[in-house]
Length: 222
Ligand SMILES: C[S@@+](CC[C@H](N)C(=O)[O-])C[C@H]1O[C@@H](n2cnc3c(N)ncnc32)[C@H](O)[C@@H]1O
Image (cartoon, rainbow, N blue to C red; front, side, top):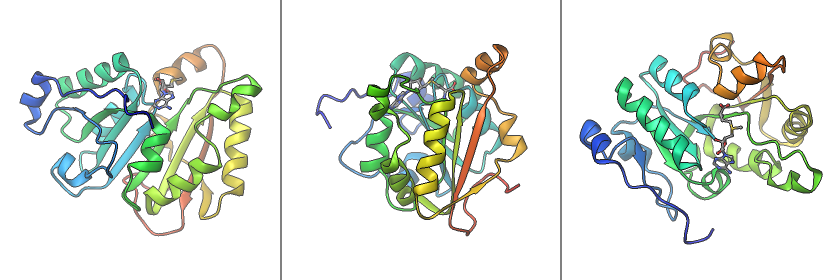
């Protein structure tokens, strides 16, 4: 990981609002994320990787006040929109972090520390020579499995048929996951990209996988 990874200092306004360092938190790239200190409680934590403008995660956080949510996004402008949504809605259970999602999953997660990982419309890298840049690779399943608590769930959505096939293949080969159906209430919470694609007649393709069988997610099972 390059040492020049960009970090973002909490804005004074958001820091003042939460009293806990703001909605956008500076990543400590050398240590696991201390979720309890970050949120000020031990509630279950869910991640969204590549959260975009945060429409999904802000609604999800508002619907599940007894859980905590960390939105991961590499683009500063999008992260600022997440920060704005969280501030406007007073969402004390939502934080944003500017960091590369693969690095975060591999290097910054304590084992069994999250109850769900949401990955919606990740960049498809359509050219074959770029497929290596796709987030959902065999290593993703390995690190997601380690980061999830028993019963934790990986939620995937995409518009891209080729990438969807890769997602299915990755999780078919991965051990320790079982395919499940995503709850209808969760699917009703559409992302910004999803709405745009659906408006163009491009359907959402959904895949969902649960780690082993114990409870752990905030989201009721279907
Ligand atoms: C196609 S957009 C989808 C955004 C959102 N999930 C949605 O469905 O509306 C993909 C998002 O992932 C972010 N992203 C792509 N690769 C990333 C990475 N490796 N780490 C963190 N964010 C990433 C992009 O900046 C972008 O905001």
